[in-house]
Image (tube, rainbow, N blue to C red; front, side, top):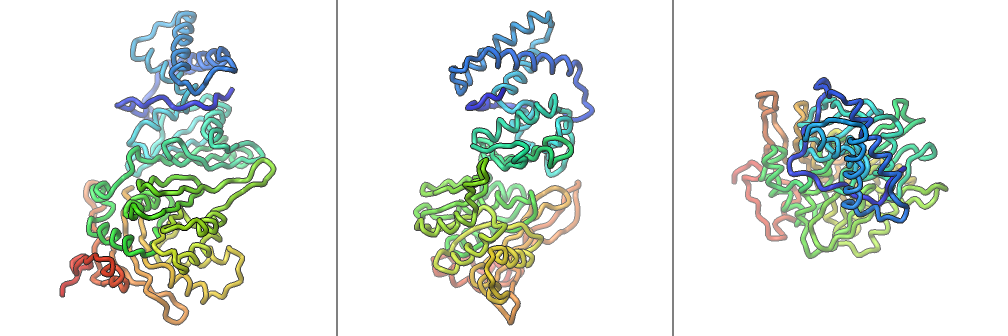
Length: 446
């Protein structure tokens, strides 16, 4: 039975440590049976007219049933073991089962569940297997349904893939049989409870303060910026920080597949794409939202990610007065980003010559910021390139900042994001809004 309309209990101040495979859990089978028995009895005792969103009421009922089951079974449990099992029972009914402790652990950045018996996590950029498991495929599927149901999404054989989000904004993807041959597969990309800011990126070594001052100036000067990188490189995190530079007195419209951006400005309109319903109708795509956003009097348009025909509408918006837009794209380099944009424009179904597409891109995009997850697991801005125009059929680009490696120390890559000594052609636009960065920002002297 699926209990809907509930919320996860408040997280403790100190999250419990995640058990790593091989640590051993004595009595885990008996503990699992106890938790399952408590869950089934609580579910059976809840009346259909009870307010299941009242988590405190449900929690008290769980505690009462738990104490009753422990007495009936004649179990002798230590205090810590008793409290841990109670929390597991609460997580099964009000939360996300075995995932709860991972979701509360801020050191875990990604959760990967490959069927009921394999749960992996990413911590500090490295993947490790945990000792956590689900009872069965049905147990895992029940947790997936609990995640997607409040969002109006569904997952079943007719629709075996789904993208969703948790209440804290964490991104969720699930895929189940028959598409997955290892059972239900769940991937959760966690977000920081407090969004990272400028100081955090500098502290983590993702980029330099000089670079962020440069980006702040570019955003204020209404330059169009694309953040590129691979999966998990940190594009959305960087987009959040860049978006924080947007003026508070402008109307900002964000467009995403699953709402993840956490803008702090007051005048923000958040739009989210919608998948088709059970009859295969009612789908609203990113492209439709971009077209609609142009009718909503936007000062700035922020698209979480362009991956298809919406690239054409985004470029046209940038070229028709809606400058100062921000977006992200999957690619391997700034140059590759422009090639991908060409391909995505062709996906719009418009029979445009390649030169016309490249002219649109060269005219619309001012800056490409490439972020990468390096081999040591750290995420860094590695290349910042200006789109400086066309020469023949080729789009011209020049690097403004480049990450230069200086070796390894304690398993970490040593290096820094350095200016190339080239002043961007759009610098006059930055100065026109009253910002003078100075030649040292770009690595040259007068």
